[in-house]
Amino acid sequence: MAGSAAPRPNGRELLVNAGVAFQQVWAAAPGLLLAYLVATAASAGAPVLVAWLTKNILDGVVAGAAFGDLVSGAVTLAAAGAAVAVVPPVSRYLTGQIERRSSLYSTEWLYRAVGRFIGLGRFEDPESLDRLRLADNSTRAPAMVVNSGLQAVGGALTVTGFIATLVVVSPVMTAIVLASSIPILVAELGLSHRRGAMEWQLGPAERREFFYSSLLTEVNAAKEVRLYGLSDFLRGRMLTERHVSDSARRTMDLRETWTQGGLSLLGAAVVGGGLIWAIRAATQGELSVGDVSLFVGGVMGVQGAVGGLISGFAEAHNQVLMFDHYRRIVESEPDLPVQARPRPAPAMRHGIELRDVWFRYSDNHSWALRGISLHIPHGRAVGLVGRNGAGKSTLVKLLCRFYDPTQGAIYWDGIDLRELDPDTLRRRISGVFQDYMEYDLTAAENIGIGDLDGLDDRNRIVAAARRAGIHDKLVTLPHGYGTLLSRLFMSESDKVDAETGVVVSGGQWQRLALARALFRHQPDLMILDEPTSGLDAEAEARIHEQIRLHRAGRTSLLISHRMSGIRDADHIVVLDEGALAEEGNHDDLMARGRIYAGLFRMQAAGYTDDDADAVTEQNQVIQSETVPIRAIRRR
Image (cartoon, rainbow, N blue to C red; front, side):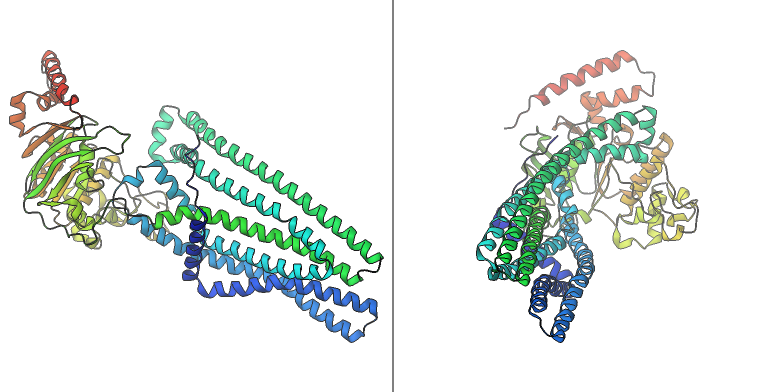
């Protein structure tokens, strides 16, 4: 249930984190920060001034000072008291404004950094996802670091003023009061470290809790949850993860309660002992009434200021620890290497070549691709066939440079993909992925985001929708192409309507994803990964005909478990357990009677009255053909 131990920043890294946090707040709200500095100074000095003014007035009353002098002192005391009363709400207003502005600033820079992630590695790694979650939760940390830091500085100024006051009364009691503050500081820092480590360790449990709660509330899972009666099961899993988090936090809260309660008793003992000493000294004529008042106010002031100092320092320390996750994301190196001056991807003239490509997701994973050498010629359609887990999706990720090969290289017109600018490369690629997205946007936007340069080009959007066979559906929606395809929130045009959005079917979502791919302006490479898996046979035939017309003269990679979408490809490649098992055109592969032929005939048997014995015999051929593939090992 617990995650791995959090990487603990050293002292230098903590100082760097604090410096970066201050820079961000200064960049986001310099004027407000200056005003807050003034308010902090006023808040720190006012209590000390009040204590001295009170002493002077009491001593003046006892000594029989002139009424006018006493009134003057009382007015000054009232003004100082007013400052003590007014500064806190002003400070709260300033901290709220600073927090909002710096949070917006931090959020922008965090997601700029996330946008610079070139590949998918950090989105498919649990530890990276935990750090990203904590970084997202830390966008308010810079303001809180500054706020807590200034609270600590204010506390230090107040403590300094009261120490100077107490030294006048009794240096020995001053030393005792200060010594009693050391255990508080040590304990609070220890608690801060423990809480930061706890937040990191609870990441996996909280992520699982969110996963189960999402299944219980999202429409995509609602049908199966109800059909299979999963509500109690998922709720139980969710609550189990919650119990893990709650138990850890309860333990932490108890530790804080006992620690801080004990420290409070220590503080009360120091105050009580100091008060007894002051009363004894006053009865012996060693202290005046004003001195007693000053001493009591000083001791209480020191303890209160020390508490504020330690609380502010501990909170700042905790926020700096949390901010470390943010800084590691924002300042992280690219997840894939990019040359200092990458080459723009040229328009394809010759094709794509994979040379002895091996790939695995980590050293702990088995090989997903094993020594693939393949040529995808320009202007030709290449079909990719294989069972689940054969490596088809991994090969697509490498072509888009979401990952780099562990060994070997992929070339675009003879140029290694690692030498190309990833943005220009991807602008030359269009694709429909098997796990296509359903965006909570309007119908037009769902298509237009396939090429942002044409997002406002309604004619192009309609043309893409027609090719994908979704136009006739979209024009019947309440606002046509401007209809929001979501029930999560309302669009501006839907505000006065009872219907604030429309939910379309899975097949219609797939057509929208296909339209999005077809909308991209003249891509050099089209990747079509199961583009018609959710369509009926008639719709599939029409869409494949449109796709054939659209990809004429373009380089295409076709991936499908339905052989009808593959058989007319110029060249077909068969993968098995990450290795290239066979290649050729449909007729060649059928004539060989190996893996492709077996898969094709098994699928065809579901639509015809072919002899079941023939299918069984072909299945045995497939099994015998896969033995050499399994024998391939890393060289």
